[in-house]
Picture 1 (cartoon, helix red, strand yellow):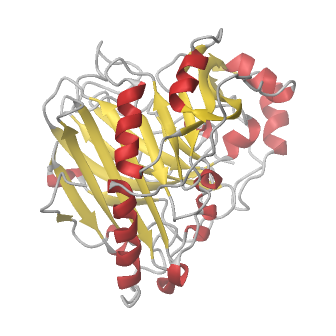
Picture 2 (tube, helix red, strand yellow):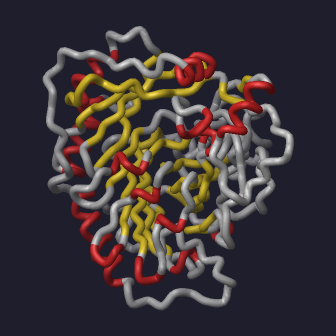
Picture 3 (cartoon, helix red, strand yellow):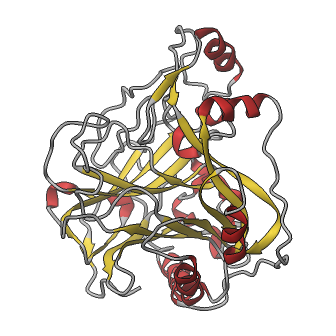
Length: 418
């Protein structure tokens, strides 16, 4: 087994996840405990299990989701959260084919978030969990013992409704149509079978400023084309996927966590306290993919913010007509202090071995961080949608990619409309 830092070849846009943390201090785990856990984890067959285990470095704190007794309206969940003796960061919602999180942000009230959600999906978000930050030690002790506590509530129960109409609802239909139209495209040849068949064949990315809410918006839609052998099931069990946009201010200035004060804000968008949603096929169970906000960016350069959504179980992404798949993600982040920045994008395959050991930790802190085994097979672990060398700038930068990113990206004339 290979432990972080990763020894995989550096690839364009690949996130610099290493031994860990997000924006927090790190703590060590006793070697004896690390050894016991490692031997019980499920690793890909190609992982080297004979090497001596290193001591995992974990965040000092992590977030976890406390399940609410039953689904309630998001506005009621916020009121509920104010009564808890916890460090509440946000709220999880699950509407069947749409899941996501609303993070507490002085610049976005819950009423504004709900209004925008209704405009995008035609329904109100049904809250199912409270996101709290706790010490890693406490989280891991709960993993080994009591488990997570359900939050009781007197708020009215709601029946979660799937998306019914709205901007994102209509865009999902367009993605499905585009996936079907791609069925006749021949697969690429000549790279020794190394095309990342686990990654989407094509997709679109929008990165723009919402001038009404004064927020940075990132919307990504992608599709997998089954007749090309293209499916999320090409990833082995125990492997997830992260969908990211990277923005760089060009300052350099070293790597996290040794950065000048205010470095996160010195960019177009801030990689902290952002709300998000992930949408799958109509009537599907979006929660099955294990979606998460990926804040962990410890080893990234100080001038780069990686804003990403991950799926711990992308293999469970629902199939539509012809066996194709689609996914649509939306991120609403605080604006930074810079009016523009260089943008790039990529999809990355990451191991969930760390999350097997620490199941109550936030996925951002255990996916592809604590352990870094090799991806089995000939496929690459990173697919670029836009190379930073092109120098494209945000905001109001929208592009499409195809052929697993092997064809040049195309700028979209309709940016920033969604």
